[in-house]
View (cartoon, helix red, strand yellow):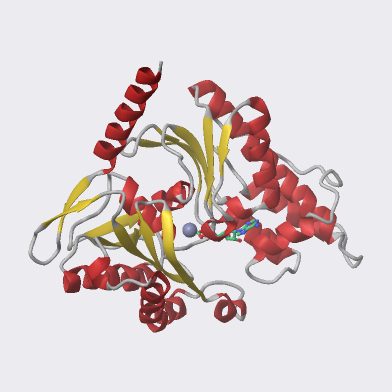
Length: 361
Ligand code: KG4
Ligand code: ZN
């Protein structure tokens, strides 16, 4: 019996080592570098309004996580102004890199590879972080690993956990709403997505409609917790397969708001009803995907994964025997730890010095 257990353990250990070890070439002199569980990866993220740098060991252990947020600057305009954001990234990028080295207590010599988000996102913003990561890789003669921002959001779930594919993921952010089937680190398929607004976008637009300041999503969530989720019945879009639509819901909220004319708006009830409609739509489609595709693990990802009710509903799947993962709050919205983790785990990365940033997938 003991022998049997020992044998299995040994096999698992071998498998883990083999699957996680990677060889990458350095940017400058094309030397090969082995990346394994003890390797440190430094990553930069600047796709939207957060300038972030992190150092992560073996894809799961965060040694430094630095985020410089531009919320204060964009608050004034009620949204992100790309040109201003890009300039802010330039101001912040060296500061976050220095701070990450300081937090982790290491130097560039200790880093095995430098990763950067290459898209999707705001082009001018992406350029800053990606080029900083490439420059560091050149200067220290280490590999550069280019990362897709959506893969990074998924990878936030690997931090401090033992999660491994296969799983179904619900990715909800300011720009994307997708149900993803992740069979392995190289086999990832989008099986459903929004045909119009992303969930985060719908949150931000509805928040604006009812007078909540930017960024509206988290504020709407907070307000919703004080309201009655069944006060107003809002329409759930009927969309094929695992796809979504949220623009009709947004219009329905607009109509509801207008119906109060000069009277005081029952803000909390509207927020709660909106949140109920969105979260139950997401929950139903995710549950269907799990059942129809035969998965037992589900992963929540993206900025909107911070939402209290979406988290609650998705975690309720534990009662049906599913294993549920969601990133810690600080790794839900944009950060660089998730980029470093993606650089460690994902197979389909952009490792070329010539790789260009892209705005859309
Ligand atoms: O992933 P993320 O940081 O940026 C993108 O890649 O888009 O997501 C930002 C989005 C914003 O739309 C923000 O309003 C939304 O996530 N968000 C939330 C919550 N926290 C952030 N939406 C609803 N409830 C929240 N608690
Ligand atoms: Zn994001």
